[in-house]
Length: 463
Ligand code: F0G
Image (cartoon, rainbow, N blue to C red; front, top):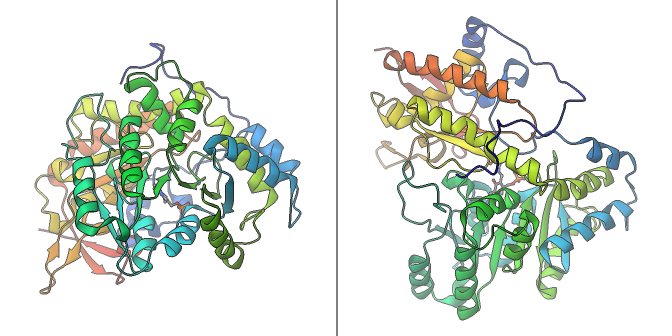
């Protein structure tokens, strides 16, 4: 990726309030991890030193956001806080109907329960887990058609988050346009390594949707991060602002769902925006019975105001440059040390290929979960497995059908950790590399019937 400046990366903010972190010993962490059944989701956050579990709702708000919260309006209906947010969102999306929700999946549930149902099909560059879960819960089918690329190699110019256009056309033909509920573009593509989606690709999807009268939804919880990649990688966008690029992309869609816990720079909040009046009426009915009245949607006035400010701050060029470069800083240095990572580095996270790193550990012994555990015991770093613990299934004889990849996601919270925290993470990886041959696998001893990565428990295999 071409940096916009050759200077050393520095955080474009200074720290006004601090939250102490507890430094613990390796022995202490070993005990805590064992008590948590080798599943860091079950750890207490006070025992975590650097928390890279998710970039969702974990960011730090600015002084401007906190100031806006102080002057928020907590009226049940027609609050000024809502009016401020609605104005910002209408300008950004160009859509006339804006519904606030408490987080992204609530917007998904409202929209997809109305569009979905038995025999309906959704097609996406890749559905995020909650998107898929909401679609399948409605009785519909969710099909992923990412482009066919080598995930760990490639040039800097790749838009590896794109949808596969020929396969999309084929699927529309096979399933028939009347059965396709919507095409969903996830921007950036979280489940495909946080990789960006090009404007050209979304424009092509728009044309296909027009041809078959299909609805195009953008899941744009990282739309500002995606705009950074478009400006610096796609021809013709160099002179546009990040906000102009986001606006251009969103104007291609019929609906927009957003978890504001990412690029809304808030700790809670979501949005659903629509072009169609009738669909928006139906969504509004569901919003009122499940989330709250149309001018707060399950949020307080404070949350609405913080989001209104966050959605503007996120397009600040200094912020976005810092954001994307600081994720790349970790990824590029890991790559240089010989740690296999998804390449090029995406927007919000670095994904380590644990199957390659621990080539001696078979997938049945969950190399991704092993790395997650090693990062915690060696450094107090919390990450998440995105592999066979999360996506693996069993066949009839209870043999594991592994996931496509065994990845570990190091998600970077926004404006929270400094470069020296990230340098610490890099040092911990030196230890991981030194001891990698001695590392042993894990077996599952307890698991729930679904979403097992949250609560499964493991035991070390000693051989
Ligand atoms: N869509 C995408 C692309 C997401 O990444 C997420 C959340 C959601 C929808 C759901 O939003 O959590 O506000 O209900 N991703 C988080 C993550 C949980 O860790 O990647 P939510």
